[in-house]
Image (cartoon, rainbow, N blue to C red; front, side):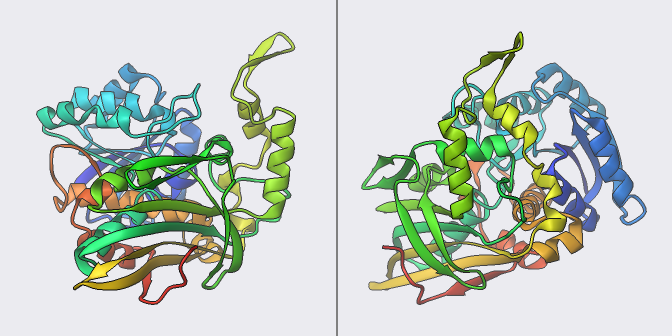
Length: 400
């Protein structure tokens, strides 16, 4: 049915490649491209002979628009799946505009030199993508991504009005390391050490990093401490859920993780300000990333489960209603299936599904869109089919 150019070769990209190859009727051809071609070749070697999908590989610097344009013109994909770093969203979008190719990513743009992420930079492309007749789908991971589809599902099927929404992201996995991150260390640490924020009564409320803490008992995981963070889907959902009064995002962290992170902050290792070391300029956080375990290697060590979902409060037929929709994912099961732990799996599967929505024409509208702006039903069905079945509860414990 179509051809995808997948940019990136880390943990999420590996899962997405595996799932595309399981879905050969839609993904007849894929090209895996990265700055390090050997990683792409390794993925190809693992999957060739197990799938009908034709796999090719390429080297590309995703910071270089001309290189990206040349590769897209050579491969001629129907869609570019951006599974690289958020820093590279805009260069890849520029290349897609120049070649009139559909675009999809899993996280919004973030400048390298500023620990700030918001959709304004990508929303600025709306008119140009519309005029070019191509579509950009933003945030087709889990959060953002599935959490946003859950919101569209709740709006369509469960509520007349949604007033309050809490997104709960729990990783109950244990990899055995004293300190490691389950996705890109640089992005993870920048996110956790930034000020928190939530949307209430039409405006942002800012908090100190990790200032707001709650405890929640997660099904099949247990009781965990979770902390309020700023997260990008709150920005788009605040615009796309009519009448919403408050949206918050919480993520769980263990005491060991937070203790190590505080020590690293205290000695300056999480800084993104360049320093001179032995005649060279380095960025401490990038150096720290280099010495920490690669998240892509955590799969064989990680045990436990993730539990990620959304709790809604609102009204249906004039009556108060609560609703919880969520997914539970097992680290060991995902490793057996695709060789990756569940944090990569829960992002890589929705990346494949989002691309599939575009390639099959189920979602097809020129312009730049967040994922909750489309009919959630085919995506929700695909979650059940492709490895992330969802559950629901009509009497959840609420977060105070």
